[in-house]
Image (cartoon, rainbow, N blue to C red):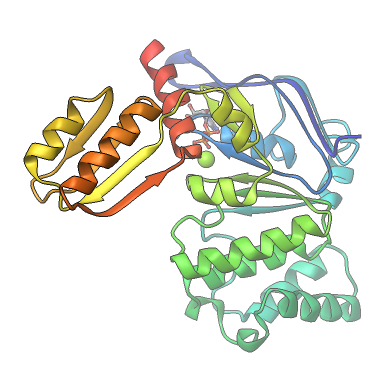
Length: 312
Ligand SMILES: Nc1ncnc2c1ncn2[C@@H]1O[C@H](COP(=O)(O)OP(=O)(O)O)[C@@H](O)[C@H]1O
Ligand SMILES: [Mg+2]
């Protein structure tokens, strides 16, 4: 049985001047236990609306969503008991309280008695690597540390499902890497995750599948490999120290190629033959830092979302 089961989910909002916005349009998907599903899409695509419906903060206009076997509309309390939510914003923590005080407060709100709240708080602080700063005020924390406290709060109730809406937004790369490591530990322990992110590498590294969303619809859903198989994205060829004459000959090959005035080339040869010809030209010209990279989720995103925007 899928831990998250969404069928024909639609949510409309009445915007200004009576205009109706369809934030979610007949969305259907399932997520299995221990899976991390990435939600990718431009601003306004409907990602936060989906997170809010799944966490019972918003009621759908039509369709159904079940989380851990419970219906988000008819059994919201059961759902809430099994989910944790982390939002990108900084709100919801008391800056003047320490990390430990914040967490004890939230644990008490969740109905844990004082002893249980203390124990659970200490455990979570340890797991998230916050023990060393547990008694410092949250207002003195870096962005990455604050997000750790948010995650700690979401984990207090030992949720089966974590909904993360742009959790690493604004984090420095080091903090982001630590956060991703935590998510990986949670999924391998069986926690099911829905992760909204603008970071393609993060999605590719953490998520077993990703859904590309635009205008409230899922345009594609699958593993990175499955999504790549659906587009004909050429490999990227980059090099430095490329003479103008060589750049021009590479640009004349099938595919695309641009070189800046400093001699940095970025090309997408259309086929294997053009790729090997380009490589040969670069070798003859003694270009440096030559590298060929396979297409990634970024190319999938560009292809699908830009195609879609072009079609509109
Ligand atoms: N409370 C609301 N009232 C009116 N429109 C809303 C509301 N919440 C979201 N929307 C609209 O729904 C669409 C999807 O928004 P959202 O889910 O926040 O997108 P995303 O998180 O992908 O950026 C947008 O057009 C947005 O303006
Ligand atoms: Mg959003």
